Amino acid sequence: MKRVTALFLTFLMLFLAACGSTEQAVTTSTLWEAIPEETKEAAAEEAAVEEETAVPSKEESTDAGTDAAASETFETTAEDTTETTGTLDALMADFMTQHGLNESNFSVSCKNLVTGETYYYNELTMFDGASTYKLPLNLLYYDLEAAGTYTEDSIIPGTDTPLSECHYQSLVYSNNELSEAMTNAYGSYDVLKSDMRRYYTLTDEEIDDSYYHHNYFCSRMMMDCAAYLYANQDRYPDALSFLEQAQPGMYFRTYLPDVTIAQKYGRRDGYEHTAGIVFADTPFVLSVYSYQAANAADMIGQCAKLFYDYTMGE
Image (cartoon, rainbow, N blue to C red):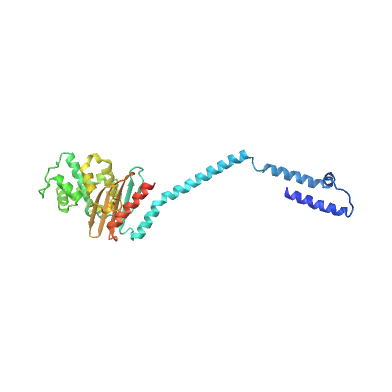
């Protein structure tokens, strides 16, 4: 329409110029009659096009705006979901950088016991498990008691200590002498390690053969043990009670003093680990393995706090 108007004004100026100094009155009808027919036809076509592309009415505009807003909301939600999914990865990347952690000295496995969400880093790498082996070891003996093979008063060969006290000393104070006696009394070491697999979810392909012949474990194995214990709390009430007493103010409890935590630590020759259950409003199981990490005990505590904050903030 603007193009036609310009043509019209141009023609009008030429027309007035042609009138010269005469004082002839120019009416609208006179001007319209003076416009060439081809200009009139162009104006009509231009107006028709503008009518087709006119701004919708208020009602039409509202519907269109709603559809656009819905589309925008969906896209934003999708972006937010992606960002949320990547949040824990980013948090852990920063955490590892701050503490100088990498595949050679760090492994972590965590599972949200409500949503089933898991986080793994280097979870299948075998480490010397130090004293964390005592968690599945004691579960095996509780199972033997349930099967009638032992009673809580049974004396473990090589000691004068009843089994109930062995459990207590092994899980609360990580007593090495009694735990080693329990290991020796079980039988063949590779059979012991094979039987421990009942508490893991790992496949044959995920377990290195060295596992069966050494005190080797990976963080996911201990995470699985903790998850198994959580799922079968009624079968192992003493184990839970003992683990809740272990290492007060240390490891997972360092920065979570008001949260009930059942944990088993291990420390030997530069290896320092902790695995257990964090009974938060949204409970989770966590297993942290480390080797020659700087200030490892505190690092493990900070790691537990990170997963706690992330889980509670979801």
